[in-house]
Image (cartoon, rainbow, N blue to C red; front, side):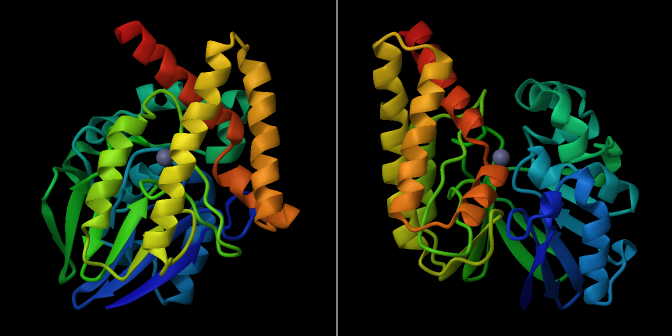
Length: 298
Ligand SMILES: [Zn+2]
């Protein structure tokens, strides 16, 4: 089994969004499609491996966010079978709601960031459930339901590695830094902590987060990530309790994250890659929404 990291060079930026190409005995399998805006880059990466899109018959996506699965409809129209969390499956077949939800976050930058998002023919979409074994090209992927970043998220374990999407947070090659993607409306740290516990049980030696590339020190990374999640949620909660407005909280949060980045000796170019993979304003809005929902429920 060979795993290749395809750099989709999102927004002309290396190491931001990955897709993973795995060769099984029966041919290639793709994990994550990237967005519609990177299809040409995807074709170029595939041709470096002697492939055209028609050669790829099986595509797995960890969840339906546009940076992970925006091109899934396009792949389905090339004839690929798309494996996706059962909650996300209807939104690949009819992406209208997904696009409205993303539009709330990205506004008029939708087209330039994500390109086109085509509906997938229903017959090309296979809904996946927790514990399912997906057999593709002689490979067996085990789906692990991992809500927290989104309700509709799977990690796919393949032998002694796992493709973690956003469920293990973000780490871009460079100094050991970790980043929290906490988008509205579904970010939920209570669920996420349980998902992290499930990940720790995986008998794997490395993980492949979509942002970005193979990570061997994944247990240390998960420890750092869990601490960051609880600190970030607390950081926002304290300011909400003090009656601060969203923009004030965002300003404070940006300052805090910048400090963390400089403390980790992240150069500014690398910090930009983190920001591109995970805009900080999005996480602030996601955390605020989580607390407001929780308050409304209590
Ligand atoms: Zn996501």
